[in-house]
Length: 120
Image (cartoon, rainbow, N blue to C red; front, side, top):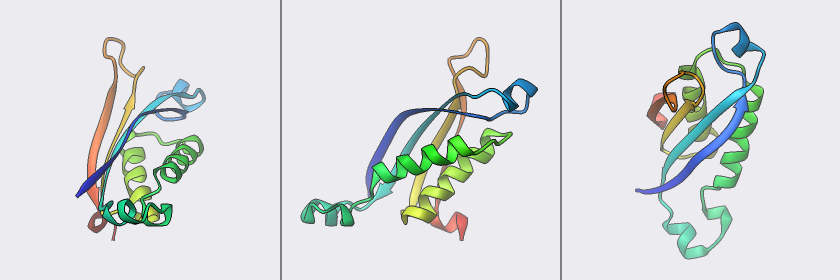
């Protein structure tokens, strides 16, 4: 299976359990690996045959900017579900990080891998 990689998508949103995190947007870093068979798109050179990663990115941005989850666990799972269910891929890895969450760490986050069977 081939891989589509979306790396270091830096967004701003409401996420966290602390009072200041509930009102002030913070950086949210997202990485994804989307497994798909790209052979048909490679042969036809037509976007209709491809996994449209621009549309996926726009939808992820829309979701993150509209959400206000308490836990990264919720957001990372919602994003995996969104990519699989709305874009018809079979498998995705999603990593969501909060770069400013821990004082002495560059970042903290959660990475999950899900398949279509996880959401049916």
